[in-house]
Image (cartoon, rainbow, N blue to C red; front, side):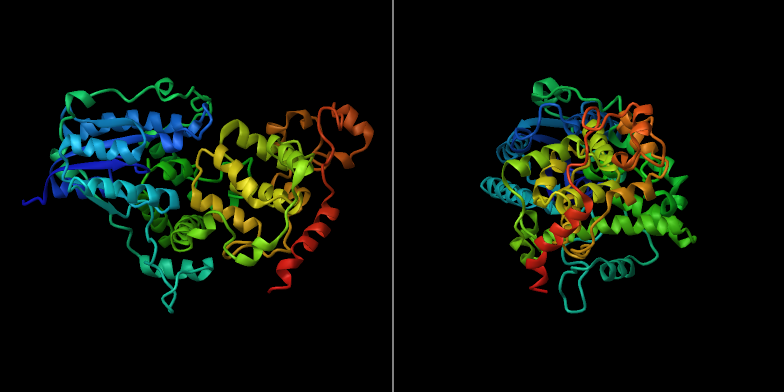
Length: 489
């Protein structure tokens, strides 16, 4: 079989798996010998806190991937080359050193990543090395699903219909790597090293292991198997944070330790057999594609409102605004469900999707703070942080995004708590000082009788804060704040 290139280099980024990997598969089919590399990019790492669960997740996933690549190649000298530096210089330098004719990578849709890839492309071209990128971490990208007018979708429901119609009843084709795995090359002696320890990268261990999060494809496969048994009930359980409803695969999707094609195939299989839960979960996977195509087609959303008129809103600023932000970040708002959700985020790096909506709406429409402040905090804390989904979610709660909730829809954190954590199980787990309160009082402790508070050991203003804002007053202020938008509609 004729192959176009002698030597190829696969630049792994958010596709940390040895199977159904589009870039790896393309390289193996096109090159006589293939090296695989990952760059711990200082352009990203230097901006992160020194204890970051994402870095640890990536590092542990790379350790597993290194072993898997050797197994796939059937060679003990094969494996993963890991660099630590600025990707814009380290990757081209490695390609030149290896004598690569082409570098293969998966498409990235984030503005900074696109800029990075353009710089890498230029640096490679200076050495007559091609950069070949392929679609991997979405099913349909950029302009693959368009309106009848040939425009990108800005509303989800018609996008979902078009997406499902294009998919049809057949699962997406995977990108097999096994048939051509013999092309995986031995690593040069200078790069035949173990994956760097966290310390050498400038980071310290986190509570990742204690949280029971298993990195790599082993962790992803265990979650897939577990969710397969629960998928049919997803529609009934997904909104209740104290119930095991979600798949918990978001971090694996983020770093590509599981294939989106595999998950869509599984969801489609169950949907076609009549499972409502699988149908709803498939739609959630389509939301992921939707936000990716929004970011790709409307890159201004990364720092501005999708709907420009929403940038006319005047948000709170100054010392009071900063103190409100601090209370929200620390889970000290006086609203138990909001505080429990923020505690979950701070302690685990994860937040239940229903609670992302509740806490986001609270920041924007109760505290009157710019949605970008919350977006930045989530970006720092979420282990599954993805720019497109995080931005899409924040613009949804602020009503500034595509297909967002109406500006006058303001989540009531008390009724949300009563509906989705009726017994207070989630609140008791993450706000233990309220554990002694009854289900009747735990959602709004300031409304409880002093005797009930005392018997539960709750001292408002002492071991649990009073509400930092009144819901009714906040609603009035929000409607007035959004009046500037209403006048333009």
